[in-house]
Amino acid sequence: LLIIALLLAIVAVILYWNWISARVSTDTLIQKGLKRKEFIPYYQVVVDCRTGQVVGQEMLVRWRRFDGTLVQPNQFIPYAEDSGLILSITESLLEQVYRDLTRLKGWVSVNVVAQHLEAGLLSEWLKSHQDKRVKRISFELTERKPITFFELALTEINAVAPQCHDFKLDDFGTGFGGFSYLQQLGINSIKIDKMFIDTIGTQDLKAPVLDSIIAFGQEANMEMIAEGVETQEQADYLAAKGVYIHQGYLYARPLPLDQLLNYYHNHS
Ligand code: C2E
Ligand code: CA
Ligand code: CA
Ligand code: CA
Image (tube, rainbow, N blue to C red; front, side, top):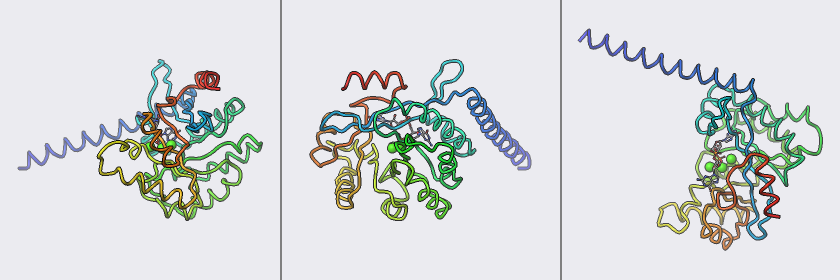
């Protein structure tokens, strides 16, 4: 029994050690990536389906490693959020968005989590970027993660909201905040999560939820953006319900700036 206990303890130590070193090496890689400016913005257009016009775009980060590989956000954003390095990544992205804005149409949204607000990062960044360009920056706050320090987050939103385009509640319907976040944080724009768009034309149990989200949004006078629109059937369904602002592969994938400019050119 003693031997088994000893073996288990050794296994536990090895697993823990591997876990720690994986974390540490990811952090080191991200820090190196930041120095080499490897985090770059991709842009996915948001379109008014009635006219086909671009009304804005969401900035989605990609990690272009020095060897040319492109790493998707799901593979590093969770680590960056745990370690706090997300703050430096976002700062670097904001600089690039600010530079690109002179060539972008409409607004551009940047994804933020509660940490950004609690750390006062946005108001700090805005202090050194006081021109009318920043009025076109929007922030998407996910409701997938809870806000720990609510008062801090609220103070930051109140400070930043008048200086930027707006705050949008991201992944609406999937998380913690829902209606109370909208009310308490004074947000009046929601992004309906792809999970619900996926149910259109299916027998999915979540299908009725989409209709209630839309009804709620209209009742509460929310600006609504449908994300993850992939098919014409989904676009038509949403338009019939009065949701006209769409984002998804049906229109375009997230693109680097030069390809985004081509998209503008081909769709104007
Ligand atoms: P999200 O904010 O919900 O962003 C939408 C995701 O759905 C993006 O994935 C986008 O490429 C994808 N998408 C859009 N339209 C479609 C569609 O029609 N079909 C399908 N299958 N997918 C579609 P992406 O770029 O891989 O980003 C994943 C997540 O990573 C984002 O989810 C967001 O939560 C996070 N993320 C991305 N960039 C940043 C960032 O700069 N900062 C932070 N904090 N998070 C970020
Ligand atoms: Ca988003
Ligand atoms: Ca989203
Ligand atoms: Ca989503």
